[in-house]
Length: 152
Image 1: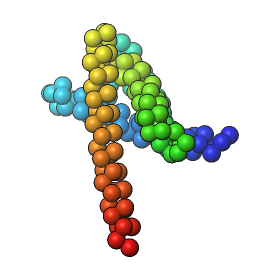
Image 2 (image 1 turned 120 degrees about the vertical axis):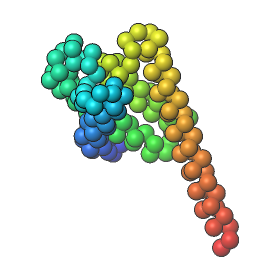
Image 3 (image 1 turned 90 degrees about the vertical axis):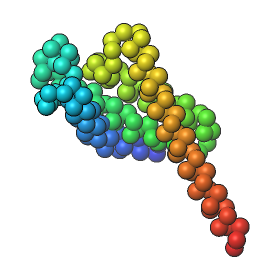
């Protein structure tokens, strides 16, 4: 097993519980959005389909998978032999593969082509926004480093 695979495995093991925590945060947001002061451990339609306990357990497993996928995929940013473009596309594909099936199964999106496309568009928009913020922050940091080195 190469070093990237080992790092990805370690990160996946740490990312799984984080994914569950984030999934729980999503259910809290869904509960607030529903109003009425009740807590819904998963989307009510999902609970009605599988039963609350089964739906909540499946959601926990899927959000663990999602967290593990995101964490493992973060190793992509450390592969220096790849271009930034290649890293971005592969990370985007890995993130989408980790999140979108979970969102569909857990009914965080409308189960239709329109709903899936809308959810994917929001996902892509958030991804691009975060990528740009991080890219610009890194460029500024590098410029400051170069400026410091230039003064010496």
